[in-house]
Length: 107
Length: 152
Length: 261
Image 1: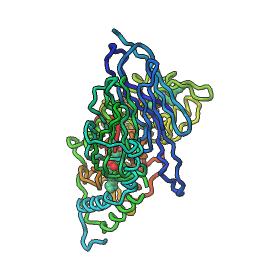
Image 2: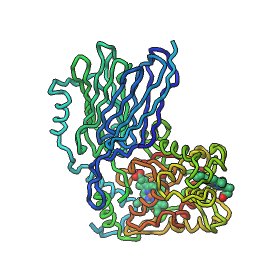
Image 3: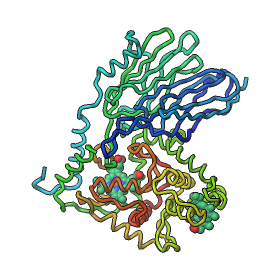
Image 4: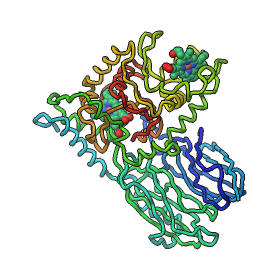
């Protein structure tokens, strides 16, 4: 798991709904493909994605092999107060990627 | 399959296309009851009512490896009335689950976008669990065409 | 695998050889990027940088640009400064003639050359993630510029060898690149539309690969598609073909990093 691209506004008014788009590089190996030798390539996918903001988990996704490679997930949240919004992806190998973006919330 | 007369290139291509049409209808991997089973696991056997959920997806896609899809649920998204979970299921991939998205009143909207894999032409079902415990659904069909000149 | 074998067997069965007339080259006014032949959804994926997975590679290339190589050499940025300025337009005129090598060199080859000669580092292998990332990052700096008419000094001969390769029938199916990309573009092969075969978007994110790949990888797929043995990565034939493809695409806009089905 290498890197992620995040798209969300830098500032928002309190109570405004903001859209967050996340894109992360990951093969999302399904566990259903085979090598030329016939050996099954073991499953290696991101199984959980979470977004935390203002003291709480505001969004979580459980993912399965039917998610496309380099997963894109877009969702929304209500701007409550200024602070970091953090994003965490966890894969089958136990590797965790966390990114954080600061949102400035005005009254 | 040798033709008795030379074909023009164009008709060769038409015939290749015909062979693809045959392939597209080959039997699929997963069983419909596996999907039904996975859905039952998600709802705990509760009644599912068609409605409130809408899936936005192209009816025909060029490549099943990456199919853009959005789901939205009719809901005021308040503390009292909101969407708790949206689950996506497929019919003919090796495994029926696609994803489960957990929302909350802090979501503001109930719209989620993602990209999924579809092994072949099939139905996709989105089921939403609302905060009152009810389940709502929509099902759509996506036709998956196949890329040419792939690796091996 | 099965899918391809069936389509190929089928083609083999119906191509008795001969009886195929060659159309003319595509007139400049009829030149169209493969982008135009994609579905609206795939186009949308390319047009929006936040939805285009290729941007993950670009971002990695950007990070590598200012990372010094192992062994104490300078980072690319140490000599080239901001890529936005120094690399603008570069990808739109490659491959070029390389005097030191005495032959044509493509952009990826040029990056490798800088690694070896200027950074005293070992080059990233062809098709490796860092080389694709750097090629995408350098390529992006030319996005929106026109492919410059391909009359490079010293490359004319290589380009005409490329044209000969493009028109040469190869493989068990005995088809040339031109049979599909000049004579039958816009037609369907299976459910895929045959594009004109322009190198406007490379490296590309191909949905079929679920990842990034070079023009050479794309051309390899076409060669294995007609059951021909593809050249090795980096082989002069690929550079010659690329030179001809760039000539053939003169005036089209560079789209790197493109998305293709």
